[in-house]
Image (cartoon, rainbow, N blue to C red; front, top):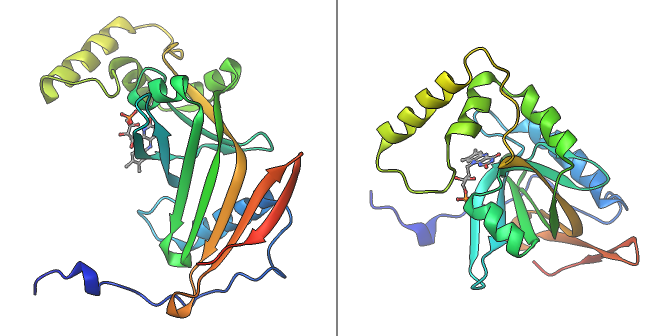
Length: 215
Ligand SMILES: Cc1cc2nc3c(=O)[nH]c(=O)nc-3n(C[C@H](O)[C@H](O)[C@H](O)COP(=O)(O)O)c2cc1C
């Protein structure tokens, strides 16, 4: 049967999102939704996966999937290569957006704010918690740069393994964490007949103001 994208749609009926159940603190609400997503989504979906959008100096947007690795009152933490495309884009323009999509719960959360590098001690601590293979990979892979072929990457990894024989593999300067400090969060809950619920939180003078948006 031919694939008809125009006909592909689901009616969402799992949950409503009413002001009575929405929390005043959007970060507390995000934690609640993330926990519920972790309990609901079946493997191999990772509830902490999200799409991160950044903008390059020509004003062109780029997005890619990343894993959320921490959440504190400061914001949302993720890790990667500081010299990658996203690293260069964030160095030039710290504004970024993240989107989480939890289909099993018919939910989306959108988060916008400014990104800064994590304190190096926190990046060190996270790096040290990773497997040896991941640590060596962070040294070996020039993320986002072109490779002649797969063998070139394997050769870089083999060189890195040789270089670190008998030595501790500590965090390279070009790899580490970022924290997105949210200025806006939007919680979307699907509902029947496209009458979805959207609650939008914006930070004004240090306080979160909530409003409802049309679906
Ligand atoms: C499920 C999943 C999780 C990922 N997690 C990360 C991550 O935490 N950090 C990261 O740098 N790249 C991660 N990636 C790879 C990114 O999508 C992307 O390919 C990489 O960061 C390079 O992006 P850039 O060239 O825009 O910098 C992940 C990809 C997938 C599909």
